Image (cartoon, rainbow, N blue to C red):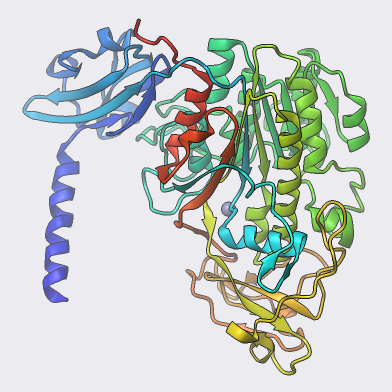
Length: 580
Ligand SMILES: [Zn+2]
């Protein structure tokens, strides 16, 4: 133990010495870059070497020549302890291996990139489904509830499972093992890894969240190169990380105002979700903007049909461009909208289902003969998993499955549409048995494991795959591996989304929500997360990807998340003929 520690310390100090002296080059080492795509090349030099003392080359030639854009140099950038050489909007057309070397005096650093071309297009359209936080246990539970299980066999297949190609996807970012939805979705949207909270940028030392080195998104690429249409559909706020990563270049996912600005700059042809307040001018009641920009008016003036209810969405059939904002916050999940009527359902009774949104999006997007890229997110699987509210998460997994069914019907036998279903990251969740209320006592006495885990007795699902109630006597024991101080009685939260922990006597630390502790049979759990956390957390576990249609054969084995972008770009042939 002592020996190991000494070795680790030596390694750590060697790394520290190395990074303290070296320049940092963005894109980082081992980046995979689509030929012809745009990116900012940035090199950060420690201290303030004169421009004449620094040199950046790509494969031995001047970087500016290879990247086809001029260099700019900023001494003591942002008043910080580094100077920066930038080549903004760089692009490399010829595929191959590129070694970038940055030298200042006797110090040098190097990275190697792979610039890849693509064969001729195989697919005209790509539909990318994201189950935010969708983990193996969510899929299994969705199958149990919507297909049933008897004698160890399921009563049917989920649409998300029933696809010919599958891969395991690793989701870590540039800065940490466990990702968030910003950098993980950014990897799918750009092919570059990024850091927690960042989208469409590498995380450099810039002070402003808008100044970090940018990489081009698939939305920008397909519009610029091919005149294709783009759709961004979610049931969360449209400014939330997953949808935002389709359009934005921002180090800070919470910067909703600039994210809306980027939606307007990129102009996806379909934008559907929640999150109205950041579209409203500051003086409009309910606005969360800090300026007087009225984005509803801007989108309207740019030719968008703007809708706020499911009825209006249906009536907008035939629109060429569509903006739908159906809730100031997130759209309510399937369990609340269809059955429990909690959340904000009473206030917003006519919110669309994700299936309605996908149908409307496909109507608009399929008008473009040049094809489209559509991203569809079932985003509350993640949010409900943070709140340790698995029934809501699983109903939204079934909703995702229904939305994928709509896409499969669209793709039919046309053989021109690649469908990909993947999570951006996992949660630490598992099904360990069933709770049986015919047993007595506290939660632990009612938990059946192994041969005691009798099949649950949820009612047969309706036509959409949803059982009409979750408070049955024999329920899944769907557990969370990471939690704050909390109480649990193994029963569903029928009165509204679970609040596992509340702020305690010490500001910024969280204790169990006593309301849950008062529930009959509840077990009080000492949290295993840091004291400042009030909810469950993401996991670094790999996630499952399934795919069908032209280009889907690229998905197999274990892949990095950046490969999802590469496979989509390859299916669409976005760098076909590059370098010739
Ligand atoms: Zn999350």
